[in-house]
Image 1 (cartoon, each protein chain N blue to C red):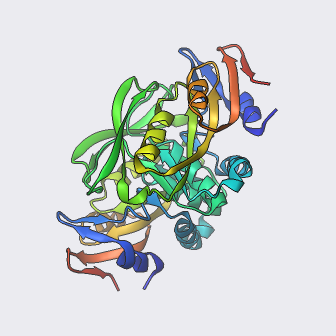
Image 2: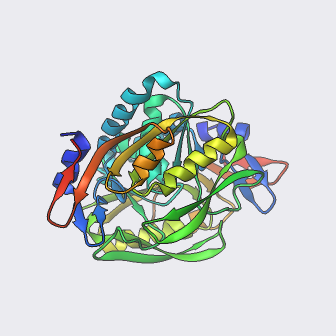
Image 3: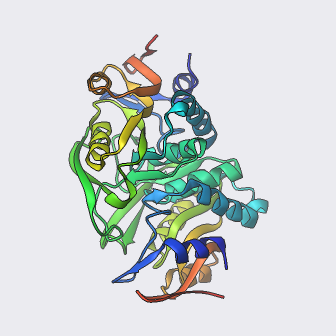
Length: 190
Length: 190
């Protein structure tokens, strides 16, 4: 069994409504030593791809992305969920529907930081319905950058995002792949 | 001149309305190699304080906090701006007024991750009016944890947050201290 799957079995909990609670180590409290080991796995998978930029989305992808960026020796760019005063000038915008929050929101990145010459690796903590990841793909496409693939911590393989995005040609490396889950049991893909 | 001040002079820009644009390396695109050097400076300042947890606030503090946590060998906890489905159970809540966004919002942390035994270092990218940092102090106080101090990347010393919080006894280590700024000039504290 994989490292992150072991940690989920030990410290994760499944809540009613299909919510996997991993906020003790992944997305509220963050175990940066674990993050480093996960980052090494992504680097192993994408080391030949000359990644020049890691793109993630706020907020819970940022920690993983920063630790991963150390492995790849490149900067992180995080897509923002609202336009703030601190970003001026032109931005790429896409629309994302959040399963977690039950909302639709715009995400943006400043055009000056996502370039046609960039080779972009997407990093996020979860892949379920794939809306956030699809939004990031769209931002890369708008920029004319090269999309290398996606490094995901936890993929809920019983939800459609992974299959749909792989069907569109996206390479996805998920470090824990959940086949099924309920409050009583948690099963991973073989 | 300090490392971060040099970088601000090189790559930062002052926009109308007192907004310092550092989103090319600090809070949109993130230079994690720079972050590591900043983290080492905070570690140098607080190394004797037995920090057990780094507390920050989403979103732009998270990257700095994660890289800093590697230096201290402790986890990061980030305060969330809204209550999501993924946090159940009891939370500490405080109210923060955002200068950047012109809004008031609640921030929360799960009680189970902020303990009376914790020795907490706060990390954030900016200190200006001090509202976010004050909110984090309040969360630490509610938990009965020990507040070791705060590591700040950029302090706008011409705004009142730093003086007020130091007056309340908070130890603050700011890595770039801006004395004054306009679209034509940027001066740092001696």
